[in-house]
Amino acid sequence: MDIISSFLGTNPQSTLFNIECATGKSIAMYTCYPNENEVILMPGTMFEVMSNPLHHPGGLHVIHLKEIT
Image 1 (cartoon, rainbow, N blue to C red):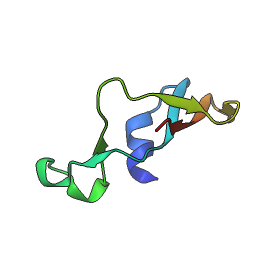
Image 2: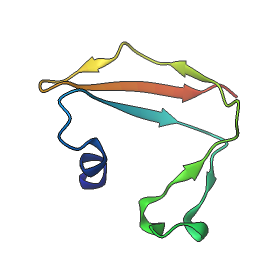
Image 3: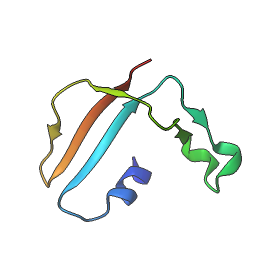
Image 4: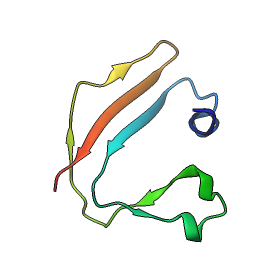
């Protein structure tokens, strides 16, 4: 969560995408941050919005997406 917080910064209006994906490929071997478990998705990957956005105090919006396979 600390990594996410650093990307969100102090902007009062931030959006966090919580993405469930099945076809993402690990980029751990190609990044300077292999412990972050980042994946890359193919262009054109489609997602379904799983629920209404969650609006947290302070302006954080969380959107839950799931890859359509």
